[in-house]
Image 1 (tube, rainbow, N blue to C red):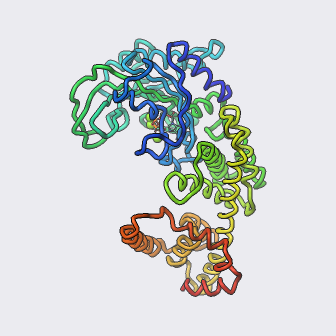
Image 2 (image 1 turned 90 degrees about the horizontal axis):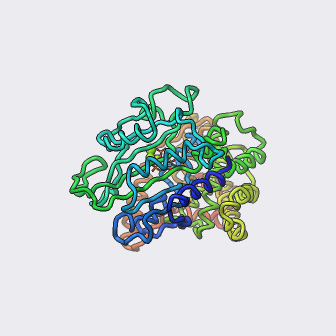
Image 3 (image 1 turned 180 degrees about the vertical axis):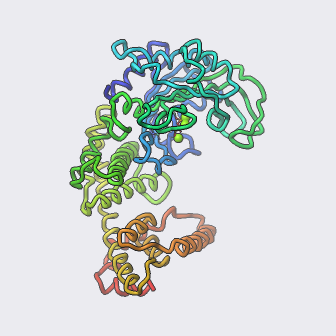
Length: 478
Ligand code: ATP
Ligand code: MG
Ligand code: MG
Ligand code: MG
């Protein structure tokens, strides 16, 4: 089942059941407290909180999302993308738990030939908030789930609120069991690699206040109009239905991964670290494409900085795959071709997107070239001095002047057989931060990352005129 097909089945299913089909909002959220749209419910928040009366009693969408907090998971777990699509169905004071559970179960288990997703009910597990007897009963009645496939969990995982006084309520999550090859059979509470979370149902049931933490708050009363907010991961269902190992191997993502393999001459599946790098590239290139198509440009602050990080991490990962030259022209074209059926704007705006991507790539490759020269010299000097540890001020210089992320310095030093004096580096960073803070107080403006200077300087004649300058620089390295 192609991703487009899973998406269409979703929209058809909920449209047939009286839901208004609402197009995806931009990744750049209207909510000033959010950098990006992180969930399907974000555009519906005014209706869910009751601030604005909902124009329809039920709605459905397939929402583009960015979650930067998952960036470290990308490529390592099978299920975390920085960009992904969340399929949602929402009820604003209309149906509640019975409707939400009933429709979710029906869509998941209706055979593919009849418009559903065709999951075998025996492969599905659910979690519920431990005191939500109503949901537990409904799962037994509607889905016929046996007691042992309903796991009761606490507020830390199975309760939703915004952290502010307002609506709140228990959640119930649906998991797919990938089978014993992926882990022990203790259910979703014990293993999130074997049991993949596919769908979260949130039952907004209470008004709360005195919110002290995720688990500590006071229920004021039941809401007069209860709401439903659900989110199903489109890529997660796609990877399960397509019979592949993870979300980076689905039809919308895999072509970028294959291109990265081709360009590097390495085979996907041959080496674990290389595989992770290829998955990171496939994810980050797609996220960057989608961000740029929603109007974000690389910069040193806010959204633009996140985009810049994604682009630079991709370049770094390609480099670790052994490719030093530019690759964005090919990688972005592959991602565009995989995404344009679902999002035609990535093709129509492509000239602009490509220009931004290639510009960023050129700049960072220069940064890398300049920094690599410095690093090589420092490595040589360190070894000559009989030390196994690169000085902290070298790592700091690379970060501060050349825009080298510390992880890159760590990895490159390790490749050369050296450790890095991380303590010294961290304390230099702390000093710099306090200086920046003092500075910001006077200027009332903070730059998210000083590496902007490295980009300009590395391009100009002044800093990188050849090895004479590098020698001067190397005296700074101590
Ligand atoms: P997980 O525990 O796996 O990190 P989550 O509990 O953070 O997921 P929710 O906030 O409940 O996720 O989001 C609703 C659904 O969106 C999830 O059930 C999942 O299918 C999907 N989803 C969430 N985060 C991601 C992601 N980073 N990449 C792909 N799909 C995601
Ligand atoms: Mg998560
Ligand atoms: Mg979860
Ligand atoms: Mg969840």
